[in-house]
Image 1 (cartoon, rainbow, N blue to C red):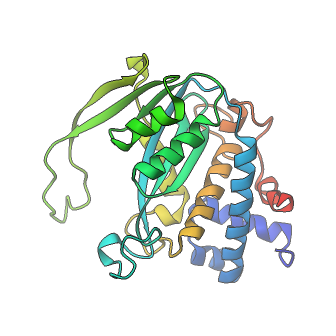
Image 2: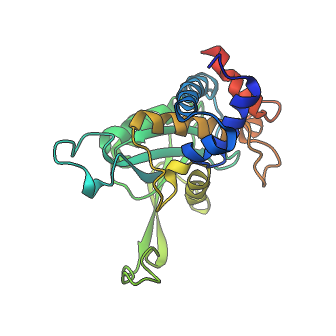
Length: 276
């Protein structure tokens, strides 16, 4: 990215982390599409490497996990037969672990919603914390073995299972409305989780869908390549952790977690490219 000045790179990154599409970023900044994508990929890789080495040795009390859906290349029903079942074509899930107190995103994994990725995700979460934690997930069965394999019995683990009514009829008014939630069942699984803190992070889903154009529903801004999606997710979470001040905290999650002493500027985020 030597041909781009710091100001231009920062302007491009500012658009990307604010949920602007690739083509929208091109129109706003005047940069070519290939230039924007190249910067996204290179900075995304730098963000992933930085997160992997910096966000460790954490003392968390309550961790909440969830999975958010989107798709690559085409929706699952439209994937050609020759590509069906291949990761990166059709449904893709982003697994996210959040510290409920500092709002720090301590781990994420992009992949399928199955036992193999559940275990990969949980092993990464367990490798970043130093103390016993209370862990809450949704009712996905893949978590049961994954959590035990990653933490052993040194965890207070519970699942929060929401109970829904019948799906609404696909009328023009209610086509995209979710079924009505009739309640939630709190199920302790391992250890002694405090029932008062059994909850999980659906608000984070909105933050992701607002901050990454690739996660916005009913648009053509979805990812065409899995690798580009992974880079966009890495950029989003490092920006979220180190640059974006959380309203209820009054600081960034990284400051609250003791990982930074000030809120990063976009220029500082871009300078991660120099550490590659």
